[in-house]
Structures are given as structure tokens and as C-alpha cells.
Image (cartoon, rainbow, N blue to C red; front, side, top):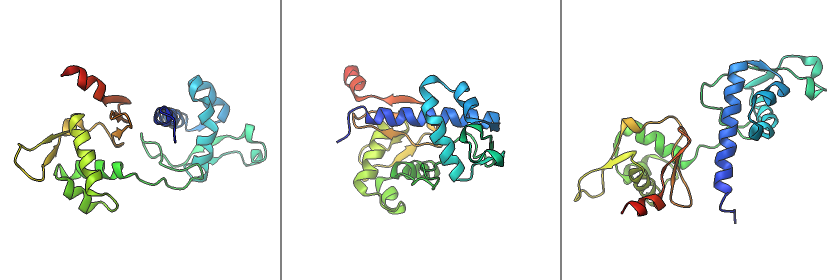
Length: 196
């Protein structure tokens, strides 16, 4: 069983990788030491693992071939810039699996209006219960509106003003919703109870 802070650590690690990716995009050609000097102290430990995964995925290359056997002297070059969103790759450089939440987020933005049945039918591996739960959570967080009572199943409408970016909102174990694009908690059930 994971600790209650495991989700927070994963979010912090992803934020660190995103900040390092931004530095890589700014520098274009760099050494590991240069990135570590520019990175936040809390992010430094993520520099080398991210460089390794980006090398394996061919997003980076080594400029100075003579330094191949001396890792601390390597000069790296950004060879494939995927834009503001860091390449979704595993530590081995393979494409990362797209989560069900990410698939639903992309479908919601494309469909604009949908029911939980729509999402479960068009997205392989997403059950009706999973789709219903995600839609309800995003409605509570303000990303969606729901049709007036009496419509069955409920019809949800995506609010274009809430399109904060490519990454899907994350549902956390404590019931809160974390926006990976704005890096904020957009819904906290503890605060919602206090508002009643």
C-alpha cells in the first residue's frame, strides 16, 4: 500500500521534469552540469534520469562523440522538440502509456457534449463507472456543466474557458482534483464541505 503522500511525490516529480524540460528547450545544447546549475535545488536529482530517458527516446543526442566513455563531459543537443509538453517517455525511452483519464480528457474536449456512456463506448478499456466518476469529479471542479435534471443519462458540456492545456486533471485519493497544467488543486472536498 502506498503512503498518503505518494500522489504528491509523483506530482512533484512530474513538475520537476517539466521545469527541466523547459530548461532543455531554452538551452538547446548543454551539459548535465549546466542544467543542474540552472535547476532548482529540489529538481537537481531529476536531471540525469530525465536526460537518460530523453537520450533513449532520441529526443536528445550527444554532440561530442569522444566523450561517450566520460559521462560527465558529454554535451547534449535537443534533436526533437515536442513543444511545451515534455515527451511522455518511460525511463527506458519507450512511449509512456496514455492513462484513461488522459483519453477521457482529450475526448471531452473534442466532443464538447457527452454522457458517461459516450465516453465508455468510444474509449477502449474505460468502464461506465470510471467515465461517470470522472465526469462527476470534473463537474464539481468546474470544468463541465450538466444538463437540467430529468435527462437520463446526464449530458455534460465541456466549458472551453476551462481548457487549461494538454494534460488531464488528476483525481486524487482524497477526492481533490489537481490541474497538471496550472499546477493547482482546483477542487478540494474539505473546502467544499466548509462552504455548506
